[in-house]
Length: 113
Image (cartoon, rainbow, N blue to C red):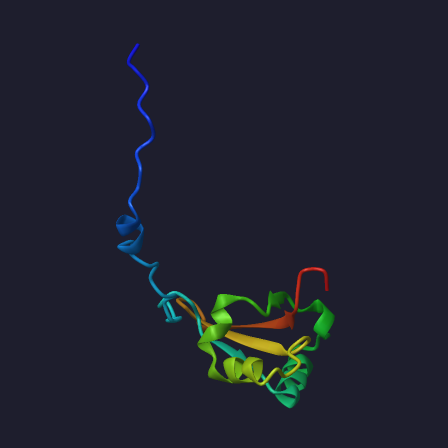
């Protein structure tokens, strides 16, 4: 058995020379994230009418979804503290068969809603 050594001491200089953590990186849209678009109330109602459905039947998307940061209107509305619950988002994805696939989502605050 080897003799046990006392724990190594760290000098105060080593603590002072420690590298601070890097600042958080700003959000940049990834090329695989399709553009999201926050619709106005009138455009949202027109989309629901064109789809012949109700808002309860639309898929949900959380307000905290990172894909929403691609829309400057959403970012401005969030910073202005506008009520976003129940608003409709349009997601446009490129499609090899349809050319452009459009999907609609309804914003919710958390999963319990």
